[in-house]
Image 1 (cartoon, rainbow, N blue to C red):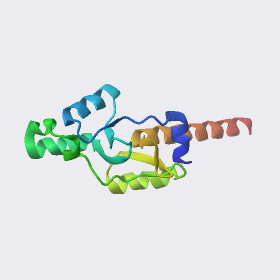
Image 2: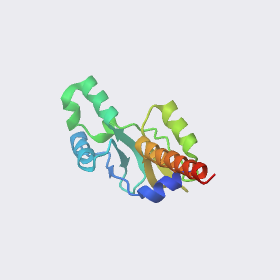
Image 3: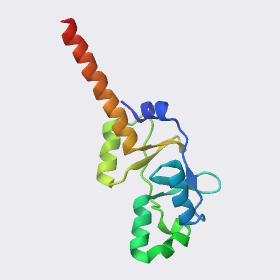
Image 4: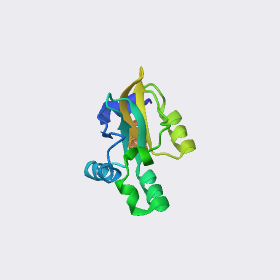
Length: 143
């Protein structure tokens, strides 16, 4: 199973913010959309970072609540690990586990194609396991 299979169900819309946006505005955006991270994209749409709940918590721990008035670029992770639509789910799970992050932009030919989260992957994997279990039950019942 590939990342593209998840994007086929989930869609390719990605919530993003600009590097100069304030952290508190980015946090509000995450809350409104019910997400744990936003991509940071420049004026032409290139991915220049990712801001996650963990980045915000780290900022508050280091600088206190005043970090919320800082620009997103002050807290965002700049070296963004990405995957490709043709990457397998096991590969992506390994990247997330080793990197200790829960959101992964999907790039196709240097352009953003979507974003997958660990929740997306778990949901997809559970559906797969349930389908396999149902197929086995039907096989046993027919036998």
